[in-house]
Image (cartoon, rainbow, N blue to C red; front, side):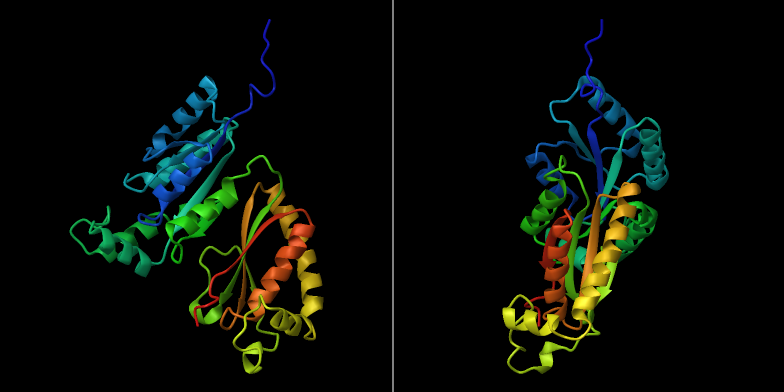
Length: 295
C-alpha cells in the first residue's frame, strides 16, 4: 500500500538564471545557494529536463532548484525554448530570471578582468556583446524577471536576489518600485512606467531644491499639488487590475518605474506612496531610488 503524500508529489520550484555574459549570473547563483537553493552552474539547455526529473525523483533536501545557463551553445535559444516547453508539458513550473547590463557597463567589466567576451571571436569586445544581445532577445522578452545590474555592486545584486527569491513560500505578486530620472534614461528592466512630470517640480523652489523626495517638506509639497492624490487613487486601482491579470498569467515579479526629470523629488515621493498603497493591498513591495544623489 502506497504511503505517498501530496507533499511527496510536489515538484521542486525551478528557476533558470540566464542573461548577458558579465551581467552577474555567478553572483545570482551564489546568492541562491546561500538561500538554500540547489544550484547547477553552466548547464546546457538540453539537460534542463533531465535535471528537473532527477531532482523530483530523488526528492532533494532542497525543494528549490536553479540552473544557470549561458549562450555559448549555437542552438541556445532553440534548445532553451524546447527545454522549457518540455518542462511545462511535464507539469514543472519554470521561471526564467534574466540578468543584463548596458553595453558600456559590460565593456568596463570585461576590461577590468582582462578577459574576452565568449562570443567575440576574432572581433572586438563590443561585437561579442552585440551578437549575444541579439541571440538573447527572445529569451529576454519571455523572461519572468529581468534585472538590470548596470548600477549595482555585488552586494546590491545579492539584495535583489534575496528580495525576489528569499521567500518563495509567501504568495502574491512581488513588486519592485524604482524611481528614476528621465535625463538618465529609462530603467531597462521596467515592466510598467509612470511619468510624474505632470506635477510642479520642487527643483524650482529654492528651499526644496537641496532635499529629495524622502524629506517631509518635499513629500508634502508633491502630494499637495492638484492632481497628485487623484492620480495615486486612480493608478492604485489600475495596478490592482494589472496585478490580478499578472497573477492569472503566472507572473510573480513586476518592476514599476516611476520617473521625473532628475529622479530626485517627484518620482521619489510618488514611489514611496505607490509602494505603501500596494503593501496595504497585501503585495510584497521593495522601493528603491536609482538616481538620488546622482546630480
